[in-house]
Amino acid sequence: MIRIYSLRGLLLGHNLAFLLLIIVTGAMGWVGVELRQRASEESLRLNTLMSLVQETRGDVYRQMTEVFDHHFLGEVGAVTDYRRTSARILSTFAHMEDVARLPAERTAIDGLKEAYQTVRRRTDQIMSTPSTAVRQADQLAVFFTADLRMVWLDDYELVFALNDELLTVAQAAEKVRVDALSRISGLVLLIPIALAAILLLFSRSFVQRAFVRPIGSLLDAFDAYAKGQLDHKVPEHGVTELVTLERAVNRMAQELAQSREALVSAERQAALGALVPVVAHNIRNPLAAIRATAQVHEGPGTPREVVQGLKDIRATVDRLERWLSALLSYLNPLRLARAEVRLSEIVDQAVMFLAPRLEAKQIRLRRVGWDVPAVASIDVHLMEQAVYGLLGNAVEASPDSAPITLTVRAAGANVQMVISDRGPGMPFRPMQGDLHPGPTTKSYGSGLGIPFAFKICGLHQGMLEFAAREGGGTEVIVTLPAAQSAHATVARSA
Image 1: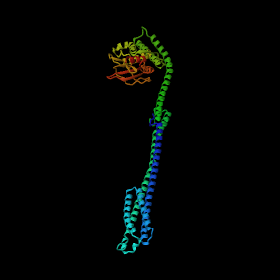
Image 2: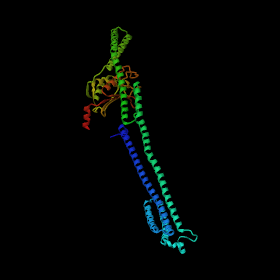
Image 3: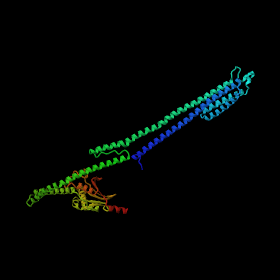
């Protein structure tokens, strides 16, 4: 399927627009030819009509001379010529009626025929009188009135006037036709020009909106990326192909930004991984000597204040040793040994190790969803350490005798473990990859439990989230992909 707002759609629309322009131009040309043909026919008709009018005028004049030739000159063939001319005039009238189309033309022809019939009745009476009758006084009344005026000549003058009127009507029709043809010819010429101008303006606007501006945005984005501004976004506008390219460029910039962050993080991790063992080795040797010296000086005769100080020294040395071990565990590369295990078993194992601390603070555990088959493919040992650290933080933050809720549940294609405590809440939002989780009042631990849990969840393609618990406290949500076998079991049971 061709999308209209695409390169293929644009090409198709361009071709169709020019095809339409060609069709319209051809149609206008055909209309022009048709109008020219009709104008030519109309001009020929009007010229024929005017020619017939002139011919009729000449025949009437000739007929009048034949009347004079018969009675005043006594020509023998005048009567025959008169009749032949009369027949020709009637034939011309018939031809004029065939040529006439306009009502004004037909009215003028009818008036001319009626006037001629009046003249014809008089001239027929005159032509029926012998030419010798003109000498007789009593026959002169046929030609002359009392004031010696020839009345039948007045009738001929009326015929000539009507001839002129018909000629005037034909000429007026010719002028109207010429004016109309001029207007129509201008319109026929303007329509293709207007369509071409509209097509040009639309094409320019469309090319600006669909190509020029998007390409300019892409060039600006490439300049920004060259300067390291990978957070720059290309506006997604233009034809479909350019929008696809803009989305690909935005996605590329996002992936480059992520790759750069990952590279920086990897370089930082590598630097720390190379530095920490050296630092740990250089710290552990003095710490071992300090602890040994403190232990040697502790004896039966040692004063109580000194013994307490030596115990504090050993406790501090042990704490530093635990911190170094946790830091090495966090920074060292880890390989997962996966096994399909229920999350509830991982939580129970971590709770077993925390039993003394739970008893010391009289904290009750409330288990929810332990009957849910929430199975994940995980490294049991590493996940136990991560859960142990998160649960230890909850125990440390909870007041004495405050309950902690442990929830295991299925969440679509994932399984979740939720730890809800009723402590004062976290004054910060832990972020993945941050070795400084925030302020703490704890006197126990290395401070790397949360970063280590983030790392373990990330290795399992999971997610670690922290949220404020409704009513006070903190909720820690561990989300892991469910095991494939668990998916199959759920599908069969459904």
